[in-house]
Image 1 (cartoon, one colour):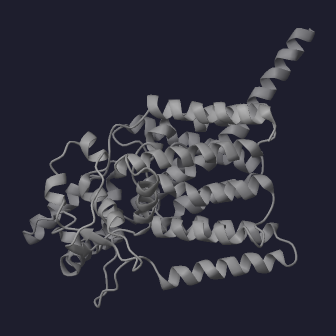
Image 2 (cartoon, rainbow, N blue to C red; image 1 turned 30 degrees about the horizontal axis):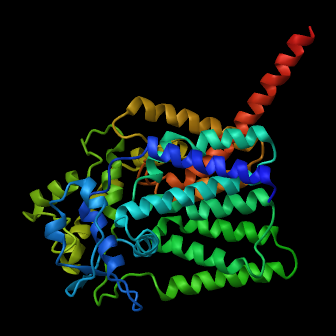
Amino acid sequence: MPSGKILYTSLLFAGILICSYLFRNQNIQAINWTYPYCSGAANLDMSFQWKVGTEEYDKLVKLPEAEYKKYRHQRSSHTILNQYNNFGYVIIVFIARNIFFEAGDLNAVIYLQIIIHALTVILIVSLLKTRSKKLLFIFLYGLNPFIIHFVTFPFYYFWTVIPCYLFCWFYLKRKTAGVYSIVPVTLLLYLSLLIRPTTVLVIVAVYVLLFLFARGRQKLVVFLGFLGFATMAFLFDGKPKNPEKDESTVWHTAFIGFGAYPNSRNIEMKDSYLYDRYFDSTKTIVSSSPITGTFQNVSTKNAYFGFAKNQYLSLLKEEKIRLLRNASLNMLEAFSYGYIIDHKTVTYASIFVGLFIIGYAIYRRYYALGICIFCYAATYTPFYPPIPAYHFGAFLVVFILVTFLGDELLQAAVKASGRNKAR
């Protein structure tokens, strides 16, 4: 690599580190949701079972957030198998804590996320053709405080960028994966599925893109990669195999998602809203404790999500038009900066921005990028708004489109300025 590129890359990396410090997110996800992943990483072994220690929780739940971020979870002699959520983020925490072993588990994840973000930006910038596009993308995405806010939030939301990055990488290169690269690509996509199953359509879109770019025997390589991915997904999803059928957790999200917009039923987009409704109906308190909570017992978990299912299906019968309207608004917001909780005016502005970006993508024939965003959003926006945390992965694609648009506007302004000077 020429010395100029080394200096440029080093400055960009340093800039991202500085912005990550200046605009860092001071908050963390509640310990009830982070503890299972961190404890699971501390207890991870070759069985790849999600074992959560029962001994540390009561002590750690009392810690201030700043102290908890510094804590390194210990291997436990007493564990339970986690019955809720997805296994992939346990692997991320395991990797992070074994790289930054003095940092504490959550701090280690933050450091790893910052590095991955920096590498993502550097690699995408290397594929952009003009200096103006490179600079626009760096400032619009790489150094953007809005993006940094989620980069420095230690939870699985950040890692939804994996399939979107791979899609953009191959789209901008206009090349497919070869014999040697298809293996790491497939492993990364499988990890993405384990972390966040809602990325499944983007994963399929990556393979479709690779297949379309492939020629001759390359098509067989891509097909075998997809076959390997599908086989791994079928054989291991990271969840314990229960004798009784698990009720889907999506019903809870779908029901409270109705409360994203004003409604005559006064449904609110809060977990506690449906928890309270369940209590009113059954006199059973919903607990999110990762050790003794409602979701750690198959029977109590199924009872709650069965209730949520009935609530949503009842809503579906009576509110089809409003649900369809909500889904349409959600999808438009997905092409913008998403749905901003408690800021209705900003959210409604997002709808118009999304509509404009869709129009631009169609006008300039950036169909593939538009399809990527659609695939990312289509797995959850039919029933839940694209809040920025959920939608983080797609922001990479959105801001690439915004970069292309900004570059066109910049070039048009330069030409207009030149014509004015000529007069």
